[in-house]
Image (cartoon, rainbow, N blue to C red):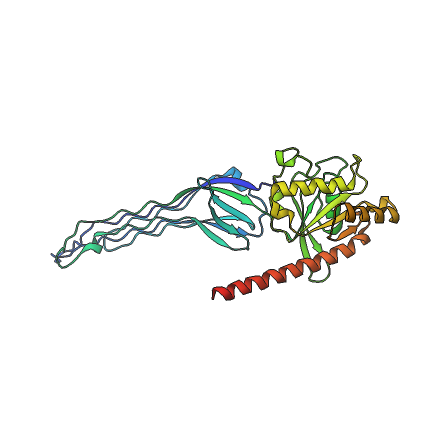
Length: 351
């Protein structure tokens, strides 16, 4: 199925059913009185996060979704049936915006999380509702209110613990295939990866994290060159980024220039994203000797004032990846604990 991370749709909640005008008519009951029942409420439209989905492709096929209308009231004080609600499954990580105002309606980050995007109409009232000691034969009823109609924009941000960024042909897809069961396309030409690829990385029994590989960035991506910044939203939720650098770039680009290019594009997209923890992964180091590796690391430390971790790996030599995988697992778990503690403190302050 094609990967789609943006969609537009129209949702229409059901109208409320109308109230009924009716009087009780039975033999030998000359003063039956009003018995018109209320209508039923209209059905609402909900989005539901489903961990089994990973694309918004279905919303490119069907764009209009309606909930059921409420039933009209009837005589003998019979209430109209409530309209059935409409539930639309979406991938976990979906954001819903109102197209007219660009207002964020909901951010579904947990499996089973539900948000109402169109409220059903309220039921109308039958004439039995209006009877009183001074008005024993009311002929007044009310109509049900119309259901809400909204134009929505859906945007998917994949939920992953670690994101891979780098220039095309830096070896990101090979890296993903080496550390997980994912099987992305690997070839010796730029932009082999055309859409995000997600894999699960095991770091031991009951210890794993998710890793997302993004299409390569190039200089000028902010202006739409190459695939632009379109997929960078998928690393906005990550706790850590792996910046993969090819030490022997096929186009002869210096590793330091590669690092600067990606750093500049991250700043152009979102300055806050550029401040996210980022580890340098010097890839294809099996092609240079240890002295060259050490000299390159020293240059990066001195010329770029790089303070973060730097790892030398080769995606075709799995043993060189073990330390990186376990360190990343520790970092992800530490970040998760920190976020849980912050949430607990926020909950305590609210109480």
